[in-house]
Image (cartoon, rainbow, N blue to C red; front, side):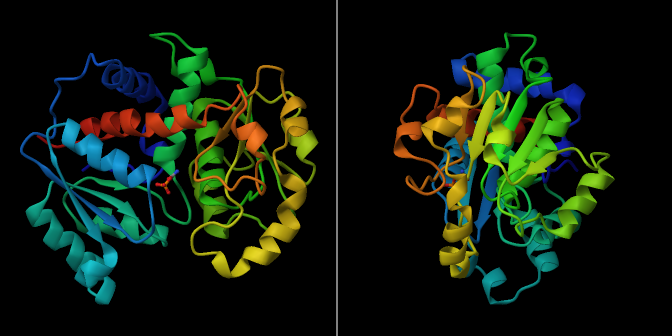
Amino acid sequence: MRHFLKETDFKYSELEGLFALAREFKTGRGRHATPLAGQTWAMIFSKSSTRTRVSFEVGIHELGGNPLFLNRNDIQLGRGETIADTARVLSRYVHGLVVRTFDHAEVEQLAAQGTIPVINALTDLLHPCQIFADAFTLAERWGRDGNLVGSLRGRKIAFVGDRGCNVANSWIMGANLFGMKISLAGPPGFDAAPEFDQLLAREGFAGGYEFTTDPYEAVRDADVVYTDVWVSMGKEEETAERIRVMSPFTVTPELLAAAKPDAFFMHCLPAHAGQEVTQTVLDSPRSIIFDEAENRLHIQKAIMATLARR
Ligand code: CP
């Protein structure tokens, strides 16, 4: 059984085909493909979502399947039914699971205990669907058909702000997988969870990133400047302290100008203008944030089409 819980669940050699399939879905060439025909895919969400929920629901529908949205608190999982029993029961009804939750171990257990594909739609540790959509967005700009993924190799991404968040972790994994360089800038004391460093080492990527407390150092020679919210879901009680210590890391027009002249600005959204990024940068011609959002749909369709059992 094949799952997508982390970036490295796809081999590098598979990525060109995956991105080409996403291109087919995006351009309409794959319009009539229905690899999920007759299937129902359940979506268990324990956190809020706009992009992920809507892009998966629309994507499952467009692939011929039936999306079944399950708020965690509306099912017995929210009242203490075990992950193992939930996985075994849902495997009798549906053909795939899309899961957004807090603890990354939950998606691993659902995958291990069930008999259907599981897709990580964000955990506290990783957000691989986002990073594949981001990478596809960049490959569309830099590459050409037949060499989408190869166009990422050697490029540099600078991640500025909360360097311990799931999107930062996933970009570290993704950059190493795609052959990119990654430099992160943020305040000290917001390191990634130890389990992330262990995972990075297991994947053969130990030490595969640079960290600095100077955002201008991080963005030097960068092809992409990336940020995410300073207060991730589940960290709300730390809001005041996070805003205080991260305020030197706002992506301003001056900081973006310190990257390469043709550097792109990216943000997974939702954005908090005036905190991690200024409205001017969000609205600038270098900002490709809505292409990223759109591409969630196309790359996730390609991922589901690859994982689906017939
Ligand atoms: N980027 C992202 O995952 O957005 P949502 O939280 O709205 O799904």
